[in-house]
Image: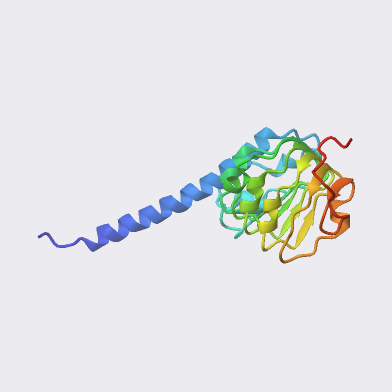
Length: 222
């Protein structure tokens, strides 16, 4: 049997590691490119998002982007609150595979939240989409974002019932869906007491800190 060529094996392993890291970094870069391309930016907040610079860590200098390490192209958080952005939540955010925080509050974003949001953003600990114009139902799939500590969806146009499955978010510390068009029984959270203020502006909600639900859920308000 031919002797094992250790230098060749070590070189191969290092090449695999470098490729894996590079591929992950490229994924995060494509995430931010997709985000920028999908948004209307009347206030030019993306002026610092220059993708022509190929130096590692360049994206960590972008406005609103925080990386796990300043010299790695690995997105930790995106915070672009109150920046006048217009558009829908980009599906390309799924390529920010290690992101834990997303704050797009106070913008002019529209449309429904993706039904597979937990597959897109599985490691989120904080999601703040408050004070936009999102509509449709709150996805049940959010309950699978099991690391969530903060979920803020207030001041939008969400309708329907709040998924009771959200009560399964055992790490949740802050939950707010005030001022939407929601109805029915509110979720029961095991480890946090959500105040009535977090449900304000949804007069057809009941249960929990709100008045007790009476009879079948009224979907029409009549």
